[in-house]
Length: 220
Ligand code: HEC
Ligand code: HEC
Image 1: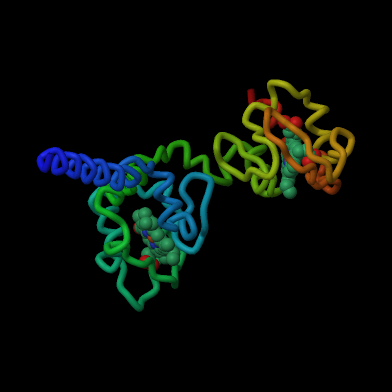
Image 2: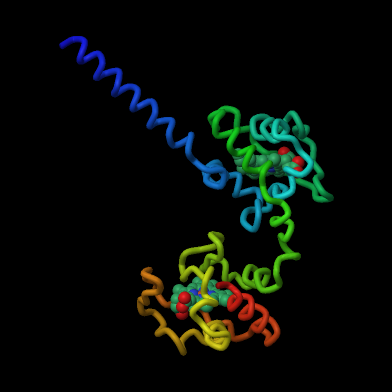
């Protein structure tokens, strides 16, 4: 009996150990990048803050271990109390070190994520983005809509909008959504319910409207 209890306790402890580490062991790079607030200061790909330098191209010139050091102890690379200049931009805010807050396995994962970042694609980063996608960002459509996983959830995902909607339908939706949806009323699109609140972009220029609508129409 004693032995049974001992084994049961061992099993329990082991399960607990595994499951408590599970979150860190499986959290993906993008998730960790958000969880540890990197995204508040840094842009990676098309999303993030500008307090610190953009990281989409860091992996091109910096080694994996350099990036790990930067996360754990930025003072190794940037002198405290001095402004730093990166790619021609001056940064006043010092990056905090994460030695005490991020478990080693998560640091590895984060560094690998930044290092492996597909900078060819990220290089399309503004202003080399497809013109329609740049406008989608500029006009803040992205605050409410997602394309390929990036953006808000206030409105429907637009990653495949071109499959079902015509060019003129999309144009009308942008300049006068009330033609399609009754303002203030819930609507269900692809199984998700949204409150109809999309603003009418009445002042958008004809050429911008054309660019953005054609871009959305191309998303199949
Ligand atoms: C409070 C804002 C802030 C947070 C949060 C932050 N950083 Fe930074 N980061 C900076 C600043 C500012 C710099 C520029 C160096 C300096 O001045 O310390 C920098 C530099 C870097 C660099 C070097 C960039 C280059 O081109 O040399 C990397 C890599 C980096 N940060 C990764 C991260 C990661 C990963 C996280 C999350 C764990 C993170 N940062 C969190 C502000 C921040
Ligand atoms: C404040 C949030 C918000 C902003 C900003 C916004 N939308 Fe919307 N959008 C919505 C919501 C909510 C809907 C659902 C119907 C409605 O409200 O008209 C919608 C619907 C759509 C649809 C139809 C989706 C479908 O599957 O039927 C398209 C296309 C669209 N928006 C494009 C855009 C574009 C392009 C922009 C930027 C110029 C934009 N939206 C800006 C919230 C927004």
